[in-house]
Image (cartoon, rainbow, N blue to C red; front, side):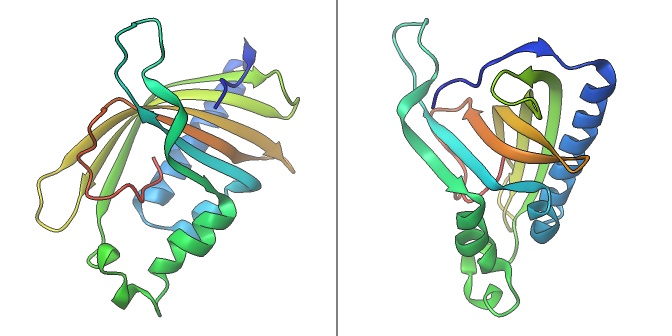
Length: 179
């Protein structure tokens, strides 16, 4: 899980368009519109949530270099995660029925040109995820995100997402969430 290399800031107009894309993508997840959300991701999409850790050395990053909570692809999300929400499966997917309610609050969006590909941007943002299941109290999860946004046929698509959760002890009922 090496850091994504990026140096040059995107221009203001491009950063605004990317911010709107990020907001639309979050809205689809909040509405549980997973098929529409998949239209916004590339075929080679990757999704990684490294394990948060607390080190004695403050110079070390607060997440593991070798351990992950989630390591998914577009294919695994389609075939293992989202299949649970299909009409023929939802009755038996007790973890999804009744559905959880989520809300994503995204701030501090900063876009830079990727040093890897000319058609990509590296986008850093802060996220506060609100998660409610049944009548349980709300769970708030603060995190930082590093997204790779690719231009494909004049549109933006999400090519990769790395999520750095701030909490070392997770209080979520499950981690089957896209942050």
